[in-house]
Image (tube, rainbow over all chains, first blue to last red; front, top):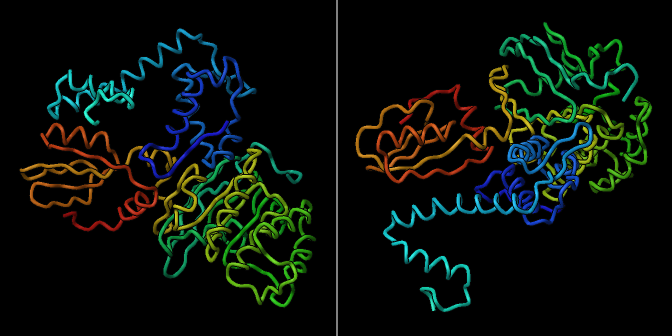
Length: 131
Length: 301
């Protein structure tokens, strides 16, 4: 499992780790029941400390995305496509909410924001503000 | 692992270790290190880092306390525990007129698990020439030899005192790679004394802060970087004391401060009605400086 970690980000290493593993699970790159790298193996491979990987795995376990099996390591929890989609939708709207609030605070109306949102989704269409 | 040492015992245990000098008191120090863990040992010069490592190695005899390596007391009369330790420090008893290879052959006799193939492979990775006389090695070359000698018997505990001083960035990276490999089986641990935390900001699990001979704090590295913040905000009135926040600076209505508990400081500032609160994360080096400064309190203004 290849992960891209950087020290130049504002995001802590453990959340960079959990975010990237979560994305692989929700996008189906990691299949239900698939085993995850051992904590030590991933620590060495990603060049982070053991506690950092532990923390990322614990967060994913708490979210119900992975399960620990005693003595066997961590596995992708079989949660089904519907639940994965639901979780991805929830996470997306949680991430969007503060952006929308900030936009409003800076004087954007909802229609403008919606136009910008569509332009971001499809940068090739000339519908947006930029030509 | 050597016989008689215990697999699940802490790789290092110091209990009530103290040592009195005319101008300095070490301890009492209590410190434990579990297998698989990396503990960074930081503190200003003279805080007692080296004395602690030397006490563990039996180079300094503490006045009080017990030191155990993998469950065995570090008794210099019964030195079998030394099979489980590798040490890199300023004092290295290598023979200056001998070559690197001759020194390694000599060290080999003292360690049952010494692996000559591994030693030579490490020397090659670090770019250390076996045929060179130790007296002719640069500071970096001596540091490389110390690392090879400390790792060649695959000890369970590695004590490193500023091991990368004098090494160029490429060799430093190689050393870190070797340390990650060393840790991989989960049975070995590293106590890494340094004042350049950025070197091991990713390797270290925990950080112990040493000041005036005492361990003043020990924290999980991620807990520190998650909690500490540098905050900037606008506030017109006189700013009241904000808990543990420190290093307050002000220019007109603009303020800046550093806090060990970002979320509660931000909550307090919101309560006060501060505006445009911005928070930035701090590097582990910046956080260490703040923690080590705590002892030398100057008026914060």
